[in-house]
Length: 207
Image (cartoon, rainbow, N blue to C red):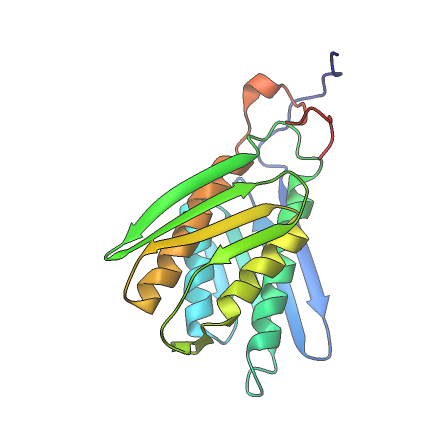
């Protein structure tokens, strides 16, 4: 069966801006998949800013995140909502996902830590996260919320996300290695493959 060819997807057209306002958080986020790794991130949680900045820099995405919320009560709402909004922005920027490589994987070291991340931008949201921490807090970031952030991102971004910590003793290094690996995996998966000539990378012809 031959699928109909579409116009090639052109880099520079894959960007999104999402705003989300609830009684608990207010988030404005813009994402450009064909950027150069520029970022402006302000969430009020230093370690969360650092992880998002690493994601943008190493994926070569342009990212702007301005987020406020009831972090004096508990940072959980803000962290989870940032993941949700980031996922929605990725989904919107990908559009019909025509021409993309779709799959990506990376193994990234950070001193003694080593993280593996694999993604499938196949349109189904699922997260399998094996990322353990020793401390309750990494800076001001509750360690338990890292998984919530990644799970919300995968669900709203409509991607399969697998994260495995292969080695590590320092929690900061563990988290940073995981986000850098996520960045490199996403960078590979969103890349346009000219051989696809704008087709959807699936036998279903839809993602």
